[in-house]
Length: 262
Image (cartoon, rainbow, N blue to C red):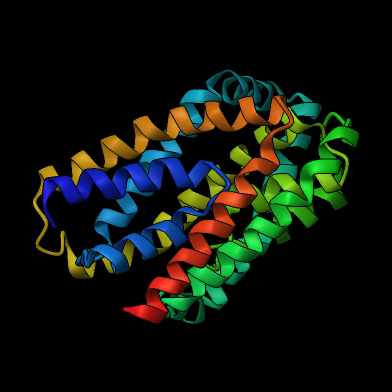
């Protein structure tokens, strides 16, 4: 993999991780269409950790307030942290106990195309929900349901941010808070996924990739991730979140057509 390909995949990861279009699906499709092979798993881990840093940067005030509240024993801070942890459980459970089956989905090139069509459908369904959602934060039941939505996003082509935010909107959570909760619950999810891949990283090392290639991809993912989060929140505020649905339908259909005709 060249530096240019590394930058391209880093851009795709950073943009699609936070915009509701599925980073995993776009990475699979990009590699299939362009014939890019990524040896080992270190590059994947690097770009995911970079997007994790994007969240911590954009939401640094919220994270520092939660950390300070937890240290001081503030009950409200601990409750919010508990909600985030609970929302992480379903995806974590599947990540541990269905790891092989999930990885098999990434080997089937049809999966991301079909899943993107599904993603478009539930994004479009948020058009009405965003007008009615006004709750300041989720309750315990809502947090669990949002976590289940995140678990479905383990399928490449199902957007994690899209699934969790749409679920939160359906459950009445105000749009900006739905986005904040979605991104904050991604912190343990991404960190946990990276930890689970440590044995694979130790086994494959850099996969023959140069350190510079990996670092450039990670830097691109981190910078684009910050911009993508801000774009995501701005579109939610303008109630134009559902406009991502046609993009998912067009890209998903075009990709399936490509697979059929190639």
